[in-house]
Length: 586
Ligand code: GLY
Image (tube, rainbow, N blue to C red; front, top):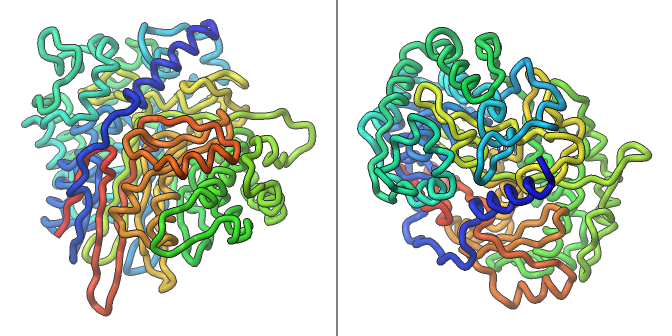
């Protein structure tokens, strides 16, 4: 594949991810609500309602998060589903314990570091590289194993009950939402190559119409089988064989052994205390938690007069400038050092060493945007310069139940409609694109990748997903947060939390407030068309030397805040108005 082909695939995908510039802000009146007992915030209203149904039936946060995830996969198969994978951060109120479950996709055993180097594009159209569409693009799915494990470990209801709302949605059909319609318009030609997805389109239609009923009987059957038989029903036997057949029919490498070998991993979450709060978040193979924690640590090292925080105010240009600068260094580390912790050595302690954070804070200039290279802190001599990667898709949800358990889940099939083929009614992921296709080779966003994140047998690709729980000064959870949207996941999650916890904005305001994003390379300070920032702040940032690049939106986040007054608890749940979902609760 030529570089020109790669770039045009990249340009088309960026268009798909960002939508037309100048898009009007979405209607946003009822995207947040307060409840006294329990709450669910997902980016699709029917998915929030699925979680609420399970809580009303006596389930807890783990049951409800599982039901919400499964329902998301039915209601919005562009972003996540049984064919993908994700991360759960779970707080168990009775013990105060935090558990992180990694159910990310794994490369099949036949994967090799050079598998994408010369691989031709399987199809025409946007996001058409071999790592983005077709069988080679898929990692072994993790979501069924993750759901089964979270319900087994923490849940109260039988899996068959938890699966119920999603199976019903698949069997009876659900209305197509605006984001699903928009994404189907970009990827229609590729989706129509698949027998199941082509059946979703009306005769001659070039996109799924908003409000059109999406019925998925094959997926309903698979969900029911999963509810009866658990993970075994997906990873062994008839459905496993069907997944292998479908993957290989479009050029993939799956074997029944790959499916049987899939395992959920429990990992130690990352944490740090910053701005008076304890932030607990995703460890590798996510780079998101590290990036957020290091950015917070750098911000704290920058003197407050250069990044003023005024309670009840919005972040001013000086703070936004410091924020943008604080991301440049950790994004460099992500590219250079991150890979699957089960396969490559990670140097987290060295990366987080206080002298390194001080050096990065020392490179900060209050009125000048510095090149990312100025924040580079190589751990080893003679390292080459690096750049960063990005992608889109994904879904984040939060659940808080009546006992105070908190579930933060981010889950994905990676690019819209994953690898754009189905198996047993399941849309299969293209998570292999989160690996580096080759050292220095461009990914979906035209950026090169690093050696630790090359594909390999059984490896998990690096992720940006950042499910996070922030604890208040009383030691109890104050905020559940996370987002969808590639590398913007990290920066969006961090900003919403800072808006609410540090600037003291009401939760809805904190979520809707315009956001910025910078990942070092490309050297662009991104703002949002759907939530435009005022000209005054943009002008002040440009005056500091930032190259301003507006895009459609900077991720979409779901959050729940928890406020206690005596015996009273107020849960405020909010679903990002950028995606149009609504929370549910009681
Ligand atoms: N595929 C999105 C992520 O894991 O960051």
